Image 1 (cartoon, rainbow, N blue to C red):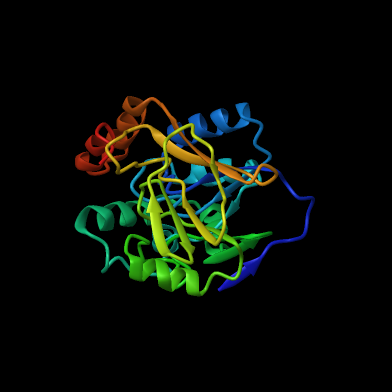
Image 2: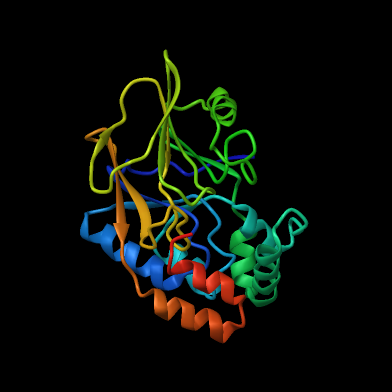
Length: 253
């Protein structure tokens, strides 16, 4: 489902975030870092909720910030739009907790999100353009399927919780692990950016991950941001969420 957004003045510096997973402490740290870098807009690639203890807080904060958001599988589960039969046991338990704790306003906001959103020259989705809610862009076949549907020069996805740059050019599909703080040119051919995860990184680095798009310079730069993991773990324990979900935050896995 493609949801075009209203026309507005073009922005130059965009914070690209994904997989916040109801981790409000991490989100606030990332937003503060992005603000310090002169970001003018926020594009959120879904899974705003799930796993973490503050689903209502993160949704309200992103609405307040004027973020453009897409729907993730955990967001859909939180509203009851999909079941949890495809989730692992920990994810299912967390999804059921989230569904029981989201306020009506939060649920309405999530229910109103589109699976694919176009922002200028960028197409935004959670998984891939082929399967926006579920598919991981981690194989050449998935990348080819994604790029076949990409009608814009650039796209951005999340879902894997791992930062990545993927290109489709004359030589085929090529992936690149970005170096934090190093600006990378958009280049030729089609480009897909995964900013990594704000709230539950899985690349062995527990710091939050996001990307900054500079449309004027034609570059994307990934950043890592430290946050108070212990505070999030404390909130998770108080909420009664599975201990394993809290413990994994310390290791970025």
